[in-house]
Image (cartoon, rainbow, N blue to C red; front, top):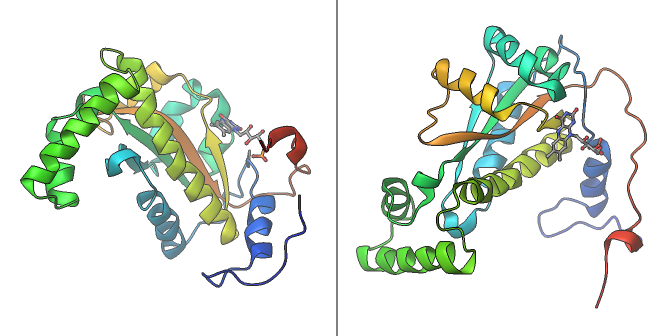
Length: 231
Ligand SMILES: Cc1cc2nc3c(=O)[nH]c(=O)nc-3n(C[C@H](O)[C@H](O)[C@H](O)COP(=O)(O)O)c2cc1C
């Protein structure tokens, strides 16, 4: 990689600081349970999730902050990848993705986003709906494939996941993304607890936040020559 200068960017953040945050972030397996993230810092993290980009701006996500120790414990047997994170994280977030019914062109959800969030005039919304319908059916060929539709929404939730973890690292907060769980069983518990309405949402991934207990192992990555190709 080329040398990174320390000069400020247009946002005032130095390039060196940005890279330092990426080096600082690591998948934290266990947190110091005596340390809690402040409300202000955690709001900042959630805000970076909320401000994340989404296809057509349809925001196919919901972030559930799971602070109940009882429900965290109920998830534990079905979340092999969160054995130490679930009991020790200061904040634990369930990243939900919208179900295919909500993401279909012409659904109540899509219509309400265009009307109430994006404030589009009726005729503009109708045009956008048409383009979106073609995109789903023809460009991405997802018509009739419920799993592909769900995963397409889930993919977008991972942008918010990445942004939240990077923002956390920038302010010295640790995190761990988690896919190590039994989706069906976990969703069953969340539905039974009234936390997730399975008609509208499924569980895309989870993410734990808190403070590290010790220093992580040095980062391992393939070289930039191995992962970047210029043509
Ligand atoms: C989508 C995704 C799911 C992951 N799931 C888990 C998990 O369930 N449990 C866990 O401890 N780490 C999980 N990780 C962390 C990875 O193992 C980790 O990011 C990777 O080994 C690189 O290490 P680093 O993040 O510390 O640099 C996950 C990472 C990603 C991106």
